[in-house]
Amino acid sequence: MQKVYILGDSHALRLGHILFDNIINRLNKDQNYFTQHTVESLRTEKQDQDGEHLFLRSELHTISVDDKSMSTAAFLGRSALNFDYSMYGYTSDWNKSSNTIMPWFGYIDIKNYLPIKTLDNFKNPKQVVETYVNNVLKNFKNSNIIFIKPIPQFEVIVSARWKTFSADPGLEFEVRHSAHIEFCERLEQKCKRHGLQSPIDISDILGVPWIYSSMQYKKPIQYIYNDHCLPEYYNKILNDFIDNKKIISFGP
Image (cartoon, rainbow, N blue to C red; front, side, top):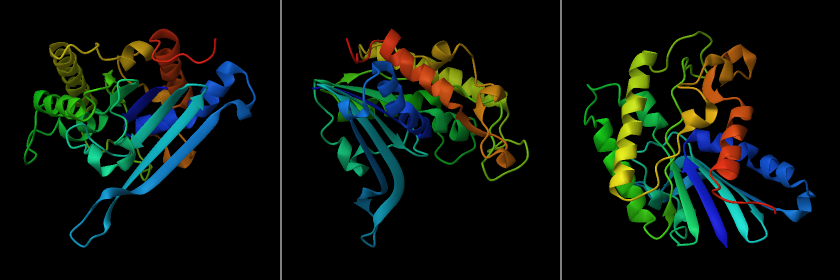
């Protein structure tokens, strides 16, 4: 069975939220033709010193059609540098030659950490990408691996708790965008060295160098913006994966 796994942070979650409708609508068949499966977990496989399982939210959305399936695995707030696959048991059987693994991390690193060089144990983009790619290769060496460049930075990033236009964290857009460019360049170079396919560029798919405020999610309206796109843009990304990149083919 051909299986595709897109794994990343909350942007993978947003992709998961439109996955079922996208595939169902493109094939124009009754919902009974498909198998849908969602796993939401609030705890990981690892335990703390008191024997309690660590609290880290994840969501796995899968749709299967005949002998093919597509999944989005979202690990909210997880960074490319520190992600630990062993914390999530359902990734343990993904390392197969018939599977395609599409890592989509890096947005959190670029937004929150890479611009702040005064952080303790600061890692630059080259170090982060080295660790990120090596970690993926270690866990999925038998699979077909296609990296996805992080979604571009947002002009306005506001916590959903706040009601004013101010950055969270307080980093100028230009600093975040510069970190994004370097991260993507390093990812390109690292993939080339390992003979991997060139990473998929989300900017090319969306046709923008960064995410404009008009593309951002604004619900509930009293909370102004948060740094997720409107559903139509995640649909555009998923359509490109299927129709243009030919990652997987559903239907005739």
